[in-house]
Image (cartoon, rainbow, N blue to C red):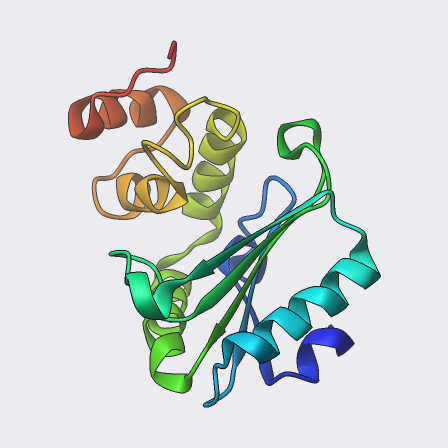
Length: 172
């Protein structure tokens, strides 16, 4: 975290922060008002030197503005095969306004979590994260919505819900 904290205010978010982590995918936001690409590539160089990833993926969402993603700069840091258990670290650099939707989403989700629905969410994530459509056709947000908004209580119920909402089945 020292490498990141030299570049701004560090926030660990996502499944780790919510106690919903089932695989090694860490989400980190670095918040600072100046989001220069040059400085972000310097940060990427520091990350690469420290962690020795086999691959890093860059996105400039200040230019592309993909729906549902923060307006900022992104490094996807891959430390090996994710499906084989290696770490993936998502590093976002945003200004405060770019971080707010992520912060608010995490707070809303955290306020709705109980021990019971946390167990349901984790069991569904454990059963589905290796599915070939995971992160392409559906994400953890779909799992959260199924459990917290539509009352899904188990893995079978999630697959039924996903088939109805997105046309995705467990056998794909």
